[in-house]
Length: 265
Image 1: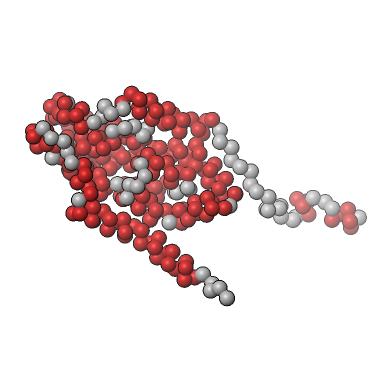
Image 2: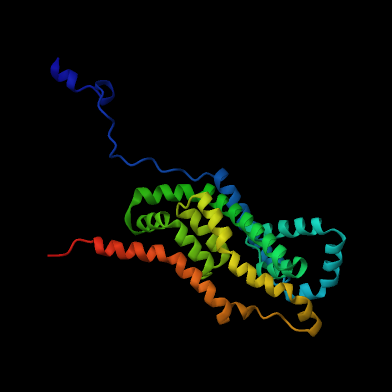
């Protein structure tokens, strides 16, 4: 009887279940994928339908009508501008730069930058949530269970999310739409993503809005705005300084990690 007793299943003798078995992988259903599929479809359609129509010349040709519309109902103009900007970002449509210039042109530096940063953050959050819901959580679970370089990279980004996201926003080395999607696949928390996006895009937005606020004189001279102003030392210097500050925690952690490594005999 003793032998028979000991051959009973673990669940009957109080033993803990075997935790060494990998957790079942989360399935990626069509329902979860639907939001990101809609975004991709609209982005493709926008690329072919809009193309280069949202450009400086379009703004120049319609400047009088836009000013009259703003003057007739400022609040409505602000709401419509924010809504369009949210859509441009959320669906990765072309024309982000010209939209920022338009914000400065219509609403001035302070109001224009405020509207643009708010709208861009909302749009970026929308695409982040769609990607995280559709693919991000499932991909995160698979990376956690697989180990290897990708899992380590995801863990590293997650542990240094604030510095990573701020640096990514301050130094736009990757397209804005990719910067919106990548954190969703790397396990970045939503609240961290939102506030770092809001703060990180302020410097660049202010510069382009500032250019836009002076478009009246540019139009009068029949010229085009110099978007390369962001690369002048007086503007690029402070942005690089903020980038270095954002990267400082990563550097300190890397140095401490090297010092903590055991010496080889």
